[in-house]
Length: 479
Image (cartoon, rainbow, N blue to C red; front, side, top):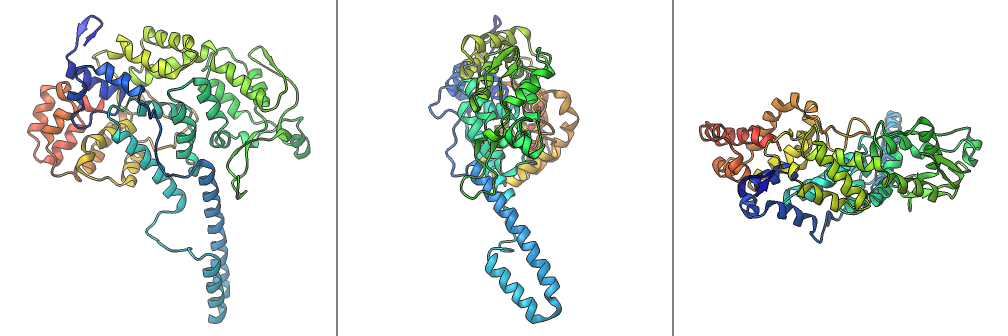
């Protein structure tokens, strides 16, 4: 393979491709794609299944209603328990309350070994996500899902039941489609509207605003402009934020307590600020929900959005300080294709700058954990709770970003935590005592492995130590 006029061996380019654009090799994938690493990545984008998941999991609305019911039942049980305590004056009264509790809440207190329903929903979604990453031949499309999910992040700390379904419903169907469609799906999803408080926003002059003496919440509008589309220092003003926030009033959800349709998106005209609004110098007539859709459509094709998305993609996959020439190529691809994200991803893979042999990126904890599981996962079963705890221990808890800008792609955010990865590596390695470290070294690093790394693995005192040292090797930690 020729990159920048220099030849890179097939296996070295293959290993580089799998670590940089996927989660690392699995099995003999280095050998399998060595004849055409770039072609393998491009083919991953053209798989008929795309980024879809075939799973039997509840929708975001179903999950929200289930969590609401669980919490309501728990509150009821707590009240029943309190009544039982107060009624303990006589055995007869205490027994009557206990019997009543069994009738009203027959499942209360059963299966104590099972996690609470909200946590179980999260575990099921997490398992589906890691299973998809582990089963992917190449992993590029899955990495794109993870990238966009972090770009348009929400937090399970605020809306636990919807975190996984949101990724499946708003992110996955659109990562290889048009950015405009992805943007519309994200900003109309109830999880995003709740996370960024738009369900609390109402126009000051709307019917509800007048009647309730409440008003605008600008969180969603600000983050759409600053994080999701244009980026900071792109020319928008506070007046644009306020006008856009007015446009988005009425974008809300049906509260999860409604048993049939709770958790679904709804446009509530009673919350919507009447009248035209001006955003980025363009006047948008008052046409209800379509007013917001029109603004999003214009933001999706704004030149600053193309630049912002291109920069973020290169920073995620290639270098903390993205090469300007590569950012320019992706920006042009975004603009020329009308925001076709598959075409932008192909441009990334086609560009020589994306294949620089120097591996500048430190893998974020989640990507590193997924790589470890891909490498040794065939040798053992890892409970999803263990996987999630590992990721949280390393500072990147799944679907729990510290702020709306998501987890950092910059090495500075993760470098201090690298020593802690050794504990995680040892915990995982302890579950695969029969694995051959030298064989796994060839499968995972191949020609990327330095003589020093090979010697370290070969002279490890135990297989467990060798496996831990392998996934802690500099060549495995970086992409």
